[in-house]
Image (cartoon, rainbow, N blue to C red; front, side):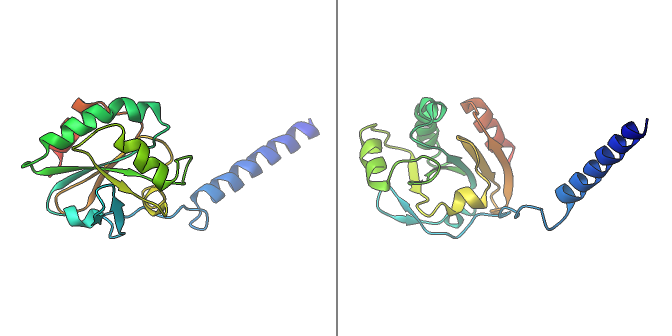
Length: 173
């Protein structure tokens, strides 16, 4: 009976310590930016962009990688959505992070991507890995949506079909 009580006490102690560690500010993870960021990113078109350049439009940012089969299977939809975005109240931006999370080098990625012949998709390179850290990207693909005022609206890790993306963009203000 004594062993049972000691076991219960240790279990409760573990539960209390675990709860304190999880909810303690010292253990809390850093907050992601709540708006479009100002980091400079190189586009595959050779231009320099900032996500904040797109303030005033709804922004759909797709974080992806060349090794991600789901990402690759959705590239045609992303390219078509990018094409249709011309003249609309939203913009489609994709972000890759060369040399981070298993992605190939920037030069290898550029060469590989040009062979795919997607002509409407804006691809930005997060070479320092700042955006994937800032927005907590842990899985590919990850979709990040911003309202017209530049404020973060939603982060969605994992696959989203085109219909869901369009529905989310329509619902944003």
